[in-house]
Length: 186
Image 1 (cartoon, rainbow, N blue to C red):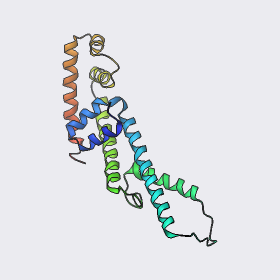
Image 2: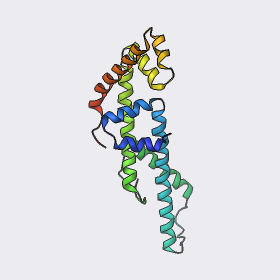
Image 3: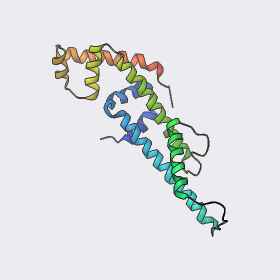
Image 4: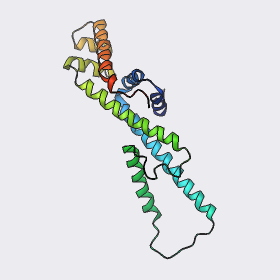
């Protein structure tokens, strides 16, 4: 079974048509895959920043209290966490998002992939929902895997092979419609 991180990594390296196939194969939980990967990226960035800050403080030697203001490391960490989450969500690399991280370029690529996946899924989903009612019903049932092909065919009063052909034709149509809206490369 392929992990969410592997799906995201494969998505980042794939051509647009292959990315459409990945969306189709994982349609039912695609946004959950993105969300879980995003949480992982947030955690990695947050941990790297904290570790490198702590390491830098230890390298400086003895801490001197200057009496100005109050130190609130928990509050500062909470604010930084919100800023990191917002920056990831908005794909905003300005500021200090990747400062104090060891894998800044990898994190940048992961964040850009997350954004691309969300945008392309939204395009795919909007076009799916714009299909004619019968095509949508059949394609949606196929994508979420809630019914076997025979059940879909029975529900639509079709032969199994006819249902299979209809879904294949609808997928090709959907692919051609969304392809112009997909990025060529990351």
